[in-house]
Image (tube, rainbow, N blue to C red; front, side, top):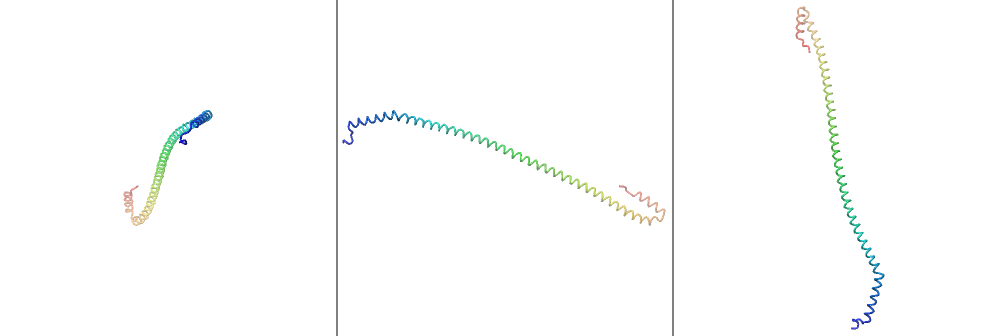
Length: 164
């Protein structure tokens, strides 16, 4: 049992040794250890505050980015709308211009057809007149051998002529 129970002198010397070590630690080690623990605590607290501040800034940046993204989308939509309107306007102007050109070409073609028709009618009239003149000349040459027949023929011809 001597091994399990310490002697009185051993307990005294162990207590004195413990108190000396405790005193030395309290005098020289506790202050630096507590100081470094306090500094570490402050550093951790500062880091937590900085992390919270960074988190808050990230949230603000995210909100700002979302606002900028929404604004960019609105501007894009506006530009697309303006582009569509511009495209539709250009198409409408091109259609109107093409229609005007087509109308001008049709009017020109109608005028040309009218002029050609008038020329053809005039030429036909001239040919009919020439043929009529030749026929009349031949018929009159046969009929006008007699003076009474000449007068009667001229009077009938004048009455029958339709001046257009």
